[in-house]
Structure formats: structure tokens, C-alpha cells
Amino acid sequence: MAAVLTKPMTMTEIKQKARNVGINPGKMKKVHLVRAIQTAESNNPCYGTNDGNCPWTECCFMADCSKVKW
Image (tube, rainbow, N blue to C red; front, top):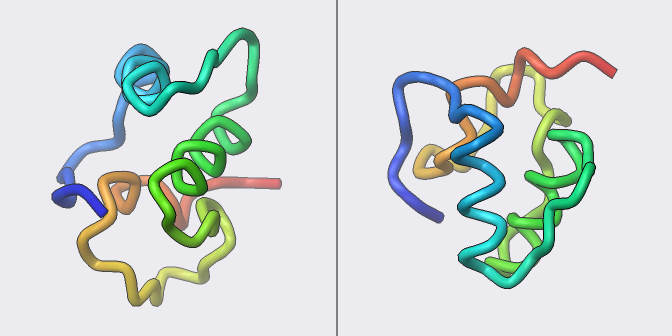
């Protein structure tokens, strides 16, 4: 996992990260795109599923992961 950011990544940053790992982001929703990135990086595709007690402290999506609403 990448370094933790103190502020959430913008969609532009997330889409660029997706392209960097070989994903065409198209019109994917943020949660699906982040999970695709996590999978492509061989990480657990868990974005938006934690209750604020996430063990993945080095995740670059941590800043807004627990705020995701389904």
C-alpha cells in the first residue's frame, strides 16, 4: 500500500492512479474505481467497508474510506 494521505484524494488523482496501474477509469464510480485499484495492487479491495478501525494504516485511501456512504 502507498503512504497515508491526510486529505482525501480527488477523483482526478484517483483516475490518474488507476491509469498508472493499467485501469481505464471511464465513468466508474469512486468506490468501484478505488476497489479496482486496490485489487490491481494486490491489496484487499476493502474501500468503504470499515467502521473506522481499519488495520491497513499505510493505505493512501484511508483519509476518506470510513466516510463512504452506501
